Amino acid sequence: MAHGNKGFGEMLGKPSGPSDAPVPRRLPVAGVLASRDNALAALSSGTKVNRVHELIDPARSRIWEGHNRDYAVLNEASCADLIESFKAQGKQEVPAIVRRVKGDAHWDFEVICGARRHWTVSWMRAHDYPDFKLLVEIRELTDEEAFRVADIENRHRKDISDYERATDYFRAIERYYDGNQQRMVERLRVTKSWLSRYLELAKLPSEVVGAFASPHVIGIRHAAELAPLLKVGKSREAIIKEALLLAGEQASLNAAQAPLLKPAFVVRRMISSAKTPPQKLAKQYADDVRASNGVIIARKERVRGGGIKLHLLPRTRIAKAEYLKAFAAIFEGLPEDAPLG
Image (cartoon, rainbow, N blue to C red; front, side, top):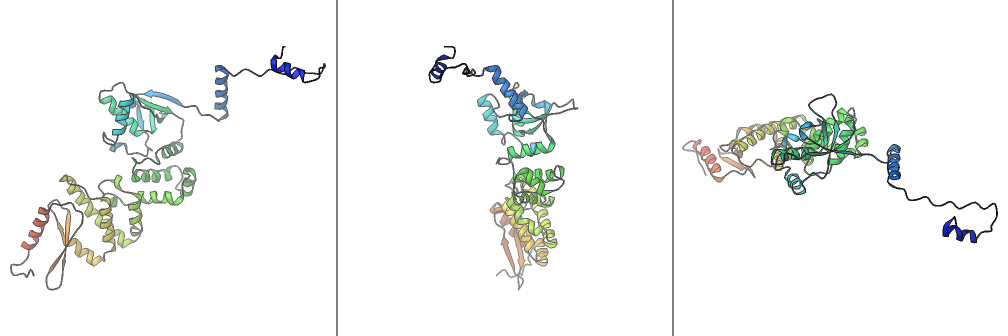
């Protein structure tokens, strides 16, 4: 019975003889040590990647300069969801991805992915949670690998603006791909047209970017509307001139704590200026009617017979009293005997 029940049954069904070899017993199920050996073998063969997680002081980690999020604009409102989650869970569930910093006594790590997590943990530590630490996953990454890891993690996040992505891609194409768009497309596994739309946004002139309430409200669709006109000398000049006026209006609105001009309205103004003949455009600038905060609310057009036609601009969010004040100033400037009918 050395072979057990299974072996005994097989022996009964086979002729006996000196040539019969013993049936080998099945190996026992691997234990803890064997499982560890299998895991090490998987690591050495490249079929499994070991990830090291640590809890660290966020003050000892810096944001990587190639990070695709604008850390400076993060605040309590933009990180509110993480703040509530960290408080409810009592910990950070998803680790930030970092790499070690070498040769700098001020820093131990730099954050490749997880700027919001880093900001939130820092906020927690400053607001009644001094022992809260940043959960990180430590990796060995080149700059190009770090860029791709950050892009993959953040590509579909809605809380990163088109402009942040665009500037990130524009910077990366020169740094890591020698300006070769096709090479970058292959590495990121995206289409060339998809990448081109973001690069187009990143190439908008600084004057055009300054016309918006914030760079973060500019979408790739806005850039797509403006790009063809910016490639032509005359229309580009008109758009930049209009953009400077819009920037002044935005500044005035901001100073008055009034709602800023919406992106779609800003784009329409710039497109309209590009399509208006230069002679009419010059006259148009001279005949702007502005509210007390500098925002253009109407435009005057002189017509035959000495009359004036007023064109009210839409969606300026200016109070009725401002219109009446501006129009009163127009009438006061007319001669006493000027016909008004």
